[in-house]
Length: 78
Image (cartoon, rainbow, N blue to C red):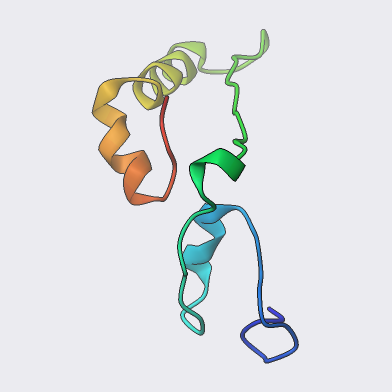
């Protein structure tokens, strides 16, 4: 990474990527009025080998029970 090796003074990246470096410290998120979000979508392919498990995973990660886990990984569930 350019910041860690001194080639850059600033990096703006997806927030969850900050967990991959112990060589620099996160200053914080972009202020809310400047923030933009990346949305994710989930689906189950018609030829999947375990559609029930895939549906359960999607149901779980979109449930309130998953919110603390997602927040711990710097994701903001909606």
